[in-house]
Length: 223
Figure (cartoon, rainbow, N blue to C red):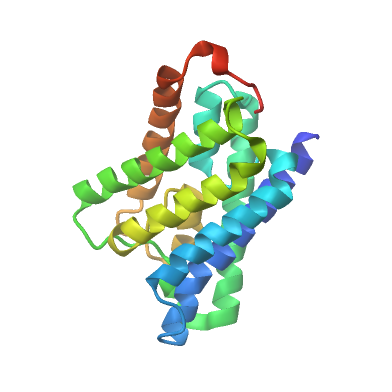
């Protein structure tokens, strides 16, 4: 597919990831008790599974600047594609946050990622959560020993598990676009850099770690 079509798929996928994932937190604020933290984590996992199967064959289903950057570092995405991919993801996130603002009004504030722990621990947690997520992505996207049909489920479960543990502490962003869209709409920029540095560092570290752990004969250039 041409780059414009792939970027379109990235925009659409990121749009629905941000609309449904953070949107569940918005619903909880508007209708208290409708969705608990477990429900928020499940929503993230479910929408990611669905969008991976719907759009993964079109663009690779990154929906995350950290993933795109990490794949470029690992030479699995042309570096010339990084800025268009990231731009499309940020636009998709911004449009989704704007839609949440129209739908839920001031309750959109709940979609923002704001750490409830100190900056240093929050940064470390975002690095580790994204490290796990990217390890799973590397396995299902680049290793011939992992069955292709499980990709969406494995990545969705990783996000769900990360969100269950990290959600109450940092929002378990793992995704600069997911944090950028709501921050731009709500004005909640407190320690926003954590949600760029942490996910990108964790994703890049995961690429090098997975390449170190697996034998060279197991490579499969799916990406």
